[in-house]
Length: 490
Image 1 (cartoon, helix red, strand yellow):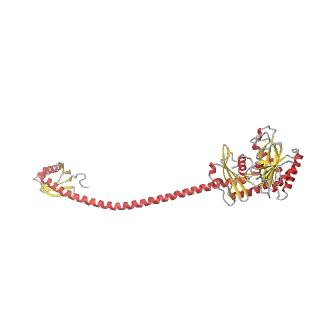
Image 2 (image 1 turned 90 degrees about the vertical axis):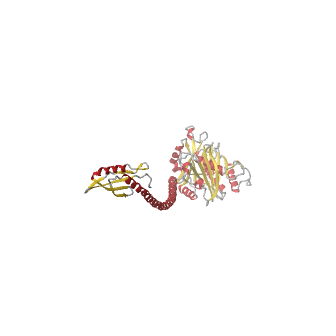
Image 3 (image 1 turned 180 degrees about the vertical axis):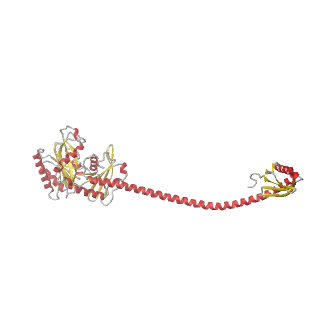
């Protein structure tokens, strides 16, 4: 993520000091880097997930995670270069890397930053006179050291996008004018590391790092400075010892900087620091200024501002960054698939719950339907019985009405032999007559067709008579359909 072209929305700076980890959180906006909180935790305690977790929220709000690396295994080089575009700086250093690195290039990782000369823009060194130069500060670290450091961070739950040196920020905290020698002390008094920068006419000429032993630290430091000064005089860029500034952690309380003139009892300075100051004064024959370095929160803010600048080289190896990216993508897939599976499982559980509820409702309806079916069957039986009774009641009067109509309409010449109902609706009449009374049979048929009851036809249909001779008699028969009122019989 350190190589991302877009500006992150947040930045973390992690400081590891023995068994203590301090996390500084910053929000990044148009106004720059703003402190947004911080915390301190032991190595055995996890860092808050809402600040350091790598999850889907980084897709929406990107974040840059920076870690401070101890300076013990770091090599620093200052390389004067002609003005160039920022994207060309890494290529120019790569051509000289074999000469600059104390180890084979394949075994180191490196990064570079530009320190512009006076009158040159820090944002774009090539913006000034083309003949101007700038100094490239190259930081070189053994690849195995960086990989071990990154692994230790990941085991503690922190995945770094950038590795920075806090001492380098103390050394380059502000531009230097004139001639100056700045010695930045880091670490405990019995195992300090000194970062040394030489400025001549405001131009950074040399930067180095040495480890000071617990005993003889002053002699070791002055010997190193003497050798550097002798080599600088041979190269022609140093004509005299410049003013010396000793930058320490926790110098005189309440003073940002100031001269340190006095005895070993100077307030705020331990004995080893006073010894180093005295040795530097004796070596340079000058008053040594003791300066308090910026407090850690301010140093973290400066680190965050520097880390947000685009870089073309990183102390984190490419394969480590690719592995981190692959792990991040894999974690997104795993979390996404897990969330999908959980959602699917929740959906299945909801479906089963709804299905069980619906099945229970169906069973209840089925039981109610069975009870209603029994009631319906009983109702149909009762209805059929009522219908039979109604038909029997209706037929009793219908038979009398038909008998009355037949008796009233039957001519005297005809003899009634049979009077019968079929299916409760069809009246069948049989009789005899003489051959000469054939017309009476037809008239009797017409009279029944016209028979009425309470002003309505008694029969809905009267079929023509069928006549057949039987000896000297004429046998006749016909059928009549009894008219029924709609709804009279259910």
